Length: 93
Image (cartoon, rainbow, N blue to C red):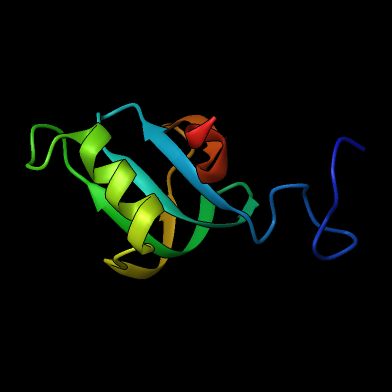
C-alpha cells in the first residue's frame, strides 16, 4: 500500500481533498469518498467552470490557501467526466 488509509477497507484517497480535472474542462475540488459504478463520489465540493474568473490556477491557489468554498455538499462526478485525480496538497510541491 502506497500510503496511509483513513478508514481501513476504503481506497487510499478516501477522505483526502483532491483536485479532479474533468473532461468537460470543469475542475472539482473536494473530499474523495469512493469511485463506483456511477462515478466518483465526492463531499464538500467546489466547482470551477472553464473560462470563469478567476482563472483556474488562481482559483485553485485560493482554494488551497483559504479552504474549499463549497458549491455542492455531495456530488457524483460521472465516470466519463473524471480525468486526472490529484491530491490538492500535491499542487503546492
